[in-house]
Amino acid sequence: MGNAHHSQWHRKHGNSVLPPHKYNPQPPPTTSNSNMLSLPYTHVDTTLRSLAAQAEGFGRFAIGGLHGPLHHVTSLADDGPGSLRNACRRKEPLWIVFEVSGTIQLSSYLNVSSHKTIDGRGQRIKLSGKGLRLKECEHVIICNLEFEGGRGHDVDAIQIKPNSKHIWIDRCTLSDFDDGLIDITRESTDITISRCHFSQHDKAMLIGADPSHVGDRCMRVTIHHCFFNGTRQRQPRVRFAKVHLYNNYIRNWGIYAVCASVESQIFSQHNIYEAGQKKVAFKYLTEQAADKEVGATGTIMSEGDIFLNGAKAGLMAVDVSCNMFHPSEHYPSWTVEAPTDDLKQILLHCTGGHFFVGPAVGPFGALGHNRLLEVRVLL
Image (cartoon, rainbow, N blue to C red; front, side):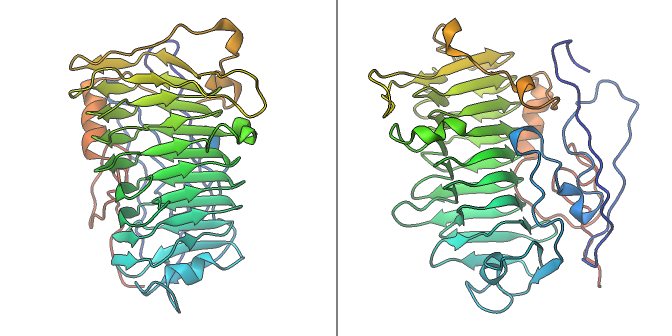
């Protein structure tokens, strides 16, 4: 599949059984067409809990609420019985599903505790006003939610800090918050962000708080098969962390696409960078770590990326002494394809959160990324 240096398609199989939820699973599609793109996660919607521990990349161990019961959200209220907030504050593992569609208007950050899956498949759930906060938690999966219209100082759509780990954010749509869309800081690590759609925003994603937080050297994040649609900057901006970007589509940035700052290591692999008015994709910023006497920038390694509409990489020479990481040192396999127009069209149309009723096989598998075969049937 692909060139010899492409990583092999990593496929794991869940063993969960169908819980009593409005969910009609289907087997993954099969094809004999060798020209079809190999895309990740064709099997993760075959049962409701097949998502658990199936992320590619650094967040691959995230199990969410696998070992807990189903919990049904029945209210769009900010708090109270049947609300999402009421479910997320509970301490036991929960697999949270929704029996309603609509907008939840949050008056304050919604804190998510450990061992939770917030599973929006089969409904259309939008969070507005404020966002989710993952604080000192582990094993959280967030799937198929929309985030739009967050207001207030330091209000991010998803804020991951401090000391959170084993997180997977999959198939979410994020736009128009007053601060960031996703911020990952304060030693939060082992995180995967996949198949998300980012738009109508300035600072999309920050990884690494500031040069004083040298503990952020532990952070590791994978971002893949995402579409950054005209977000101005920070796709992402990175301090200290190791970040693997692959098969993303980043277009029409307003300042830069990807920024490497103090001691960061960014492995950019087979991404599509399509320029608007600003042509240079990569930016470097020098900052001084609190425990160092001189400032430093980060490192970007570009492998198989393509640059369209006059885009220029703007790469600096890689310092051989910088100990640039390679993803294979941390996980054995991942799904990566050549950055073709076919891949571009899939990322253009098939990222983010949606609700589909009825059977439809799509490019991300039997449930069409998250265009789910979630046939709404009576319990």
